Amino acid sequence: MATAFNDALPKHHEATGTEKRVILASSLGTVFEWYDFYLYGLLATIISAQFFSGVNETTGFIFALAAFAAGFAVRPFGALVFGRLGDLVGRKYTFLVTMGLMGLSTFTVGVLPSYASIGVAAPIMLVLLRLMQGLALGGEYGGAATYVAEHAPNNKRGLYTSFIQTTATLGLFAALLVVIGTRTMIGEDAFKEWGWRVPFLVSAILLGVSMWIRMQLQESPVFQKMKEEGTNSKAPISEAFGNWKNARWALIALLGAVAGQAVVWYTGQFYALFFLEKMLLVDGATTNILIAVALAIGTPFFVFFGWLSDRIGRKKIILAGCALAAVTYFPAFHLLAEAANPALAKAQVAAPVSVVVNHDECSVQFDPIGKNKFDAKSCDIAKSFLAKSAVSYSNVGAEAGAIAQVKVGTATFTAPDPAKVTGEERKAAIEAFQKEVKAALAAAGYPAKADPEAMNTPLVVAVLTYLVLLVTMVYGPIAALLVELFPTRIRYTAMSLPYHIGNGWFGGFLPTTAFAMVAATGDIYYGLWYPIGICALTVVAGLLFLPETFRRNIDD
Image (cartoon, rainbow, N blue to C red; front, side, top):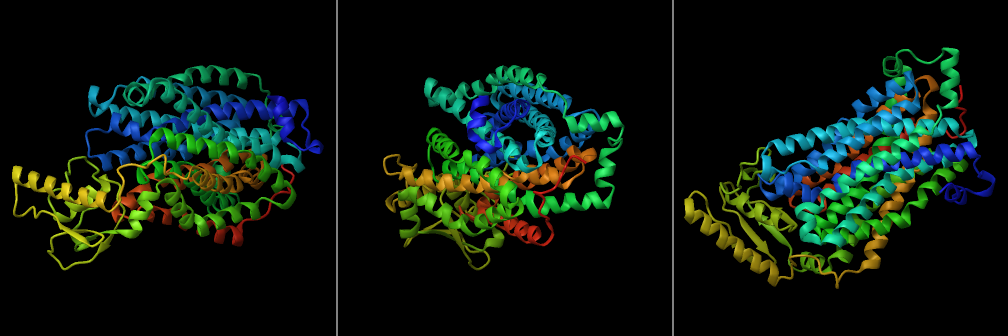
């Protein structure tokens, strides 16, 4: 594998033996941590059924995404805890602690009883394990990036740290391969019932390999020299964020680089996956394969853009990626829909669906306590059925008190009035209404699921690859930029916090926020406004305040 790293380097950039070991050991260990962390995201639909089956389907999926996001919510706290430890004790030992915590948490998810077995205790324990994973990951990335950067020559820092940038995607890719392989070997029904646990259990093997790899590392020479001289920080958190000079750079890094990078990352890899499966009705196995192919094509560009940032600078590449994302997300996802499920895209144009009602009288199609059956208002009866059927619709205003109507093309269907029917009569009326609308949707060409034979697979892969390429633009140079913004004595702490606020909060909450926006409006594309808005903010803040850092000496 060391040869593979050298093959990826231009001849005049060939690494020394020590540098190769540092890159390999840091990168491979981090790949395994990302594998552990992202398994949950890949299996969110199945986990929704296993652990949130006590609520309606739409709410269950949003809950599953919220539990996914819980791991991101605590990443900044992990950055503070382990960043402080890394600046006080050292980079290497912090690696070992974060890896052990991550591996054990992931393995435990694989043996966790489902909701059907132990009730509400199951999702509670699941969320607690996600929180432990998030804490571990909060300390991992900053350490790996700092460790590699402090071993790299000044003119190769973007190139060397770009290998760390591949680890998140390679971890996701590895998780995809294990999921696809397990699904293929045991079949989809068995996978949904019990086979989904296998990828989590495999993490025990990866934990052992990762720990062994990390044990081979020596401490960063820059940190070791600083510690021997007694110049390392005794209070890295207060020095990094209690001092406005340093805290200002953390804020600039967050808003002018990391926030945009984060939403591009999660839109291009996770939101695209969820969009294919939940909105475009592509089956889970096919979705996994399509994403895996795009990742395989796009991953080498992390190294390319890291190398390029050593030549022309970090800032312009990151901001260009954010700008392209803001401008092209809507056409890209529309094209993805047309290629992945052409029948659905055609039906949406030929026979658009709308709900005619006074919007103020509707509930948001999200139930935080799992008790709302959405049958107390005619509007909710109409919208909950369309949301469950993954049908995109527009809202048309009506006068107060009007009974909701669903229009499919030119056909109109009036929802039951809950004030006039109760009990079994209401249930029968709702079922009759849903049956009529379902038949009208089928007649208008709305498919129950995507047809693999009709899918334009090369075009789907091309769009997904484009989304991954945007990810490589913003993510490839980001580690080098963050390392270069802060002094050695507080580097681990200072760079970790903005990175994990950006990726943990701005990025990690993206799937939950975007799908809640879709549920609230009925428009399957409406959730894209979230990453577009954040990207626009980053471009403006980056142009105004973010400095170029690629020629800085970080050894001081």
